[in-house]
Amino acid sequence: MQRPRAIVLTLLPLLLLAVVAGCSALIPSPQIGRWELQTVAGVKAVFPATLVFTSVDVSIDTGCNKGAATYKLDGSKLTLADAAFTNTACGGGALTAQDNAFRAMVKGASATISSEILTLDMGSGQPVLVLKRGGGS
Image 1: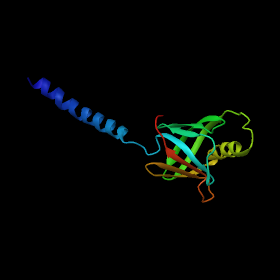
Image 2 (image 1 turned 90 degrees about the vertical axis):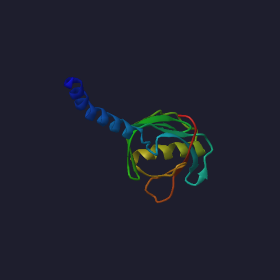
Image 3 (image 1 turned 120 degrees about the vertical axis):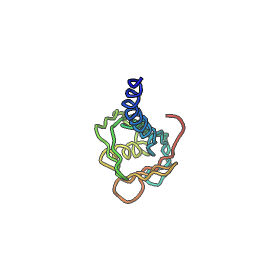
């Protein structure tokens, strides 16, 4: 009868470790989810655009072109890597400006995240892209 108890005592620490590791994976990262563009350089966005963050990458829809990248969020520093975009001509004006602002993120951005607002500053000290948490993903 000692053998089943020994097995339980041997497996219990492994089970607890697995539960703790699994729980840490459930702690949400604030950036994960769908974000919808509200303003570009202080001007209301004319065309719908989104960022959709998973735990390792981000899908980008500029309203004209689409892209994807891996990312790292270290404090407030957002760094994109391995970015790739489609290369459709955007027709000038606000849509081109919006497309260019999203593409500038590849060079690095500072991110401020509240529960509902994601603000990206490309180093100017002024918000360049302001996005609001959106539904779905």
